[in-house]
Amino acid sequence: MDKTRRKFIKNSLLTAGAFSIFPSNIILAQKNRNGIKSALPSDKINMAFVGIGNQAGWDLKNFMATGLVNNVAMCDVDMGGQQTLENLKKYPNVPKFQDFREMFDKMSNKIDAVCIGVPDFSHFPVTMLAMSLGKHVYVEKPLSRTFQESELMMNAEKKYNVVTQMGNQGHSGANYFQFKAWVEAGIIKDVTKVTAHMNGARRWHGWDTSITSFPLGQLIPKTMDWDTWLTTAQYHDYNKDFVNGQWRCWYDFGMGALGDWGAHIIDTIHQFLDLGLPYEVNPIKIEGPNPLFFPQASTLEFKFPRRKKMPPLTITWYDGVNNIPEVPKGYGNCKLDPNIPAPSTGKIQPSTLNPGKEIYSKELTFRGGSHSSTLSIIPEEAAEAMKSKLPEVPKSPSNHHENFVKSVMGQENTRSPFSISGPLSQVLVLGTLAQRLGTKLEFDRKRKQITNNNFANQLLTGIPPRKGWEEFYKL
Image (tube, rainbow, N blue to C red):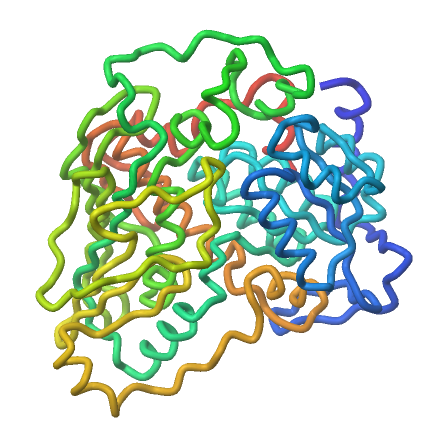
C-alpha cells in the first residue's frame, strides 16, 4: 500500500465518527425506527458502486431502477473486462476507479452509500472502510468469508451507526412476509427438522480432486489491477480460474454452494425461528474432498438447541448433483423463482430437485423454494384443511434494493441488516469449515469458539491478512 493510501486509512481511524460530511443535495436528517440517523436527500441518495460487472452489475441496474439513486462513482479492478463494458458505456461521465481506497480518498464527501459487489473474501475491507467513513453499505451475500470478519462487521455497524443490508434479495420478497406472518399466527411452530438443498452443477464439479496445488500463474490482463483484486488474501499468481465467479470454488476466496445459496434458502428459517448459532456442525457426507476447493458433494447437519419455547432443531444441508435428499409424500413440484439473477456463466444449472427446503413441525410439513418463493403446506389434503386458518400476508412495500435506499432516507428499516445477516453468515462459515476439514465441530455459542478442534477454531479468524492490509481489521 502506498503512503497516500496508508495515511488515508490511518486518518480514517482517527476521524471516523468525529464528523460527518454531507453532499450538497442533503437538506435535513431524520431517524428511522431503529434510531439510526440517516441523511435525507431532497430526492435521491448519492451511491458509489464497488464492483460493476456480473452480480454487481445486476445490483447497479436494480438500484438505478428505483429512481432514488444518483450513480456518483464506479469502481472495479478490471475496467476493460467484458463483464464491465456495458456499464462503462452506460455511464460514461461517472468518475471511475480501480482501487476503492482511491475512490474514498477522492470522493468520500460526495458519497452517501456504497453497493459492494465483489468476491466473498474482499467484502470485508471495502465494507469496513466505508462504514468507518460513515457510509451506509449494501453488501452482497454472504457477509464475509470468515467468522471473525462477520463479527467485526456487526460490531462496526453499531459503532458507526450506519444503515446496512446484505444482498439476499429474497429477504424482501413474498417468502419473508409469508414466513413472518405464519410464525406470528402459530401456523409454523414446533419445528424440529429442516432439509435444505442446492443440487445444481457447480463450477468446480468434475475437477480432479487429487489436485494439491493452485493453478499456474498466467499473464495478468492489462486492464486488471490484480494486487487490489487480492485485497487481504495472501498472494496468488493471477489465473482465469480465480476471477469472474470462479473465485467461489476456492476456500481462499469463496464460500462454495453453501455460501452462495444458503443465505437464500435458510434465511427466513434462521431469523424467524430465532436459531442464532449452532452448537454442532456434523459433516455426514463429504464426496471428493480437496484441501483447496470445495467438495463435489456434501451433507451437513447443523444442530440448534432449544430456544425459549421452541424445541431443538436440526437443519440438514445437501449439495452435489447426485446428493438428492428424500422429500416427503405429496411433495409435488417446487418451481424455481423466476427472479433469481443468472450467474456470470449465463444460466442457473438445472437439477433433479430445485433449490429449496422442507420444514417439518409436530403437526404440519412445509415445502419451500429459494429466494422469494413462498411456502406450501403438503400434502394437498393438509393444505386444504388449513386454508381457512391461514392469516392474510401483507405485500412487500419495497424490493431489497429500494428497502435499503428508503432506509438510508429514514423511511424504512432494512430487512437484512448485519445484526440479522451476520449470524446467518457465521452459520454458513461454520458449515464451510466442516466441509473443508471433514470433521464434526462442537461450538460454544456463548464464547463463540470451536471447542473440540483447535485448528478449526483458529480458522474462525483465518490466515492473517496480507502485509499492508492489516489496518482494515482495526477500523
